[in-house]
Length: 174
Image (cartoon, rainbow, N blue to C red; front, top):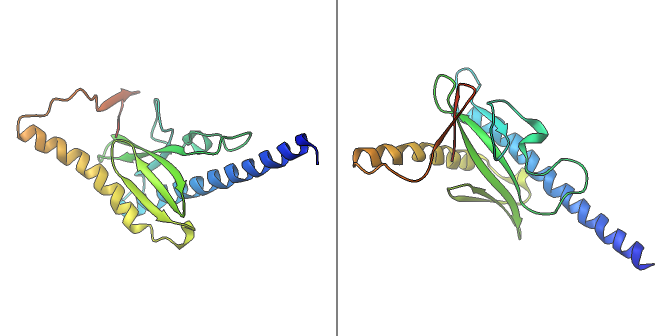
């Protein structure tokens, strides 16, 4: 086997793992979006969308554009980020929760931007998602609760800009 053929074989193995990684994270994100909305028990069923992890967004499912890596083509093998837009009012107020997912050993770690981490065992099919949904709910709930408490204590000023406004739709990133 030539060096070129050896390199091509190695890169093909790399890309196969990058595809596996993307597919796992994509599956998790899709299941999380649907499962978390069901968990929230919204009466109209419109409460969570997959959105890009950064930049302006509207409360809609973005499909492939919700992920930090493209679904096809040459992809780096590494963590992948995506956003969940969570409706936080009975109206049109949405908060984006950005997550980064990565495989570490026999675990799959989801890191919530400006928050905590959650680990899944692999394979993902063997995991009960309810504790993770509770984890995400607690993260969003506590984001608001901590700001309420800081306001009540008279110390609510930070350097953080929490809300972005775009197209008459209130959005926030946490």
